[in-house]
Length: 174
Length: 174
Image (cartoon, each protein chain N blue to C red):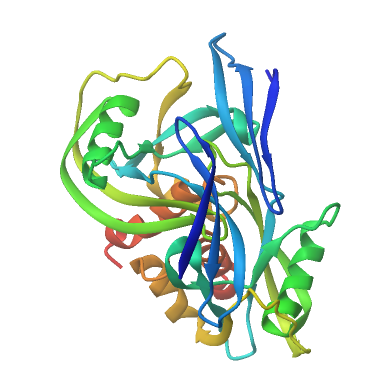
């Protein structure tokens, strides 16, 4: 049961608050909660079964990471619209075939972020439009190679590993 | 390049700060950063190739979730020690065979959490020791069923989906 909330910080991306809750066993606790608007990420496959992976600079994670095209939901924006927008802005791609790959909860102890995953096919190039604080290189990697790197732990971004894993069933038809 | 840091909040689990950074392209930005101590999670398999999954109440995620036994690193604690401790405390299990399954970055835009994943086998029961704010039921699920549920999107916790995916290669030997 939700109780009293004390807002600590409202920022550009996140909001931090403390909440007094009563758990289903009657225990009361004060939780630290980081509210995030949620996001969408895209497994974009070309006709050669290569996947679009971004090499992206992430100060918070200490360097360059391999990630799917992805981004935060704008206020009121449905996840599939975010997915389409980010695929255009970050990767310069538009897709005519879309399938949902479910969602993930990034870190359910303190962080409200849910990331919605999608598979995109039938791609055509469009102008990309990255923001100046986004450092992004677009790469094309054979899907089976990307999947193997995610399984071996060489790709560590959670949404990217899970997007590839969930897309595998559809890509291989097994 | 890291620059000036302004601490907004230091809590029990997380710390929130704003940091002025200079990105590799020379652009300056102020980032909202949520520091988390990181964690460890365990794919524990019994001799019938069933995996230990917890049904856990997560206020932040809005209800009950399926998760691997897992927890935060105590200060100075190496990840494999956290993995052993949490497997005992949450699931009441001790394992004599351990293998690393790499790590994941939960949400590299704003959140520093890294979760270290492990496979544990040769299990023996020990007394569990959950805290009163932890609502946990221990379940045993055939590994292939758990993996299918993670791939189909029925299991949504990121560390759990990825732990199962990475363990699959070892469990099946392919």
